[in-house]
Length: 173
Image (cartoon, rainbow, N blue to C red; front, top):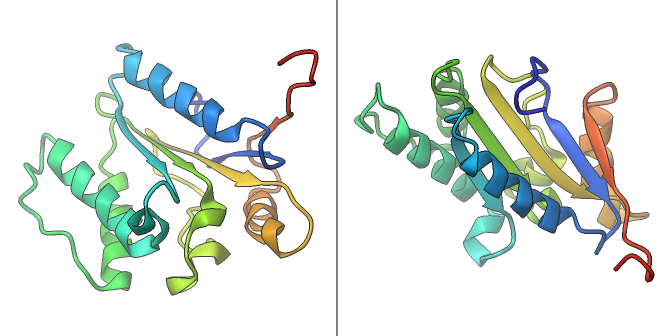
């Protein structure tokens, strides 16, 4: 996916405990180690800290990391605080990805986002990404309200790339 021309987010889904977070961590390590990609990696494990569950904090931290790593920007453009401006800034920074400086984002556990600014409704999640920008998200597959975020992610990308993570059997692991 990372080296493909597909510009839709990749949705990783599976039941709780199936290994989605482990898969995302391994993917982040491999992307970081792959010098052929020379990508800016923005890996976020949502819910790992209380602040990581708020969408403004998440998007703001992505913008700050992009500002710091953008060779063209030198971090001179401030990151806005107001939600609509922050979201526009995030999209503008993503659009600056190039073949020489691609951007790869991994967001694990979207269901751990808080409810502010419609975070779990995933309106902020792009249906299509700029060239040379990739987004891999993980969501749970579950019945009831705990599976709402996962269903939204899969439905928004009905024809998009997906990976189902199936738990190992007792014999396998």
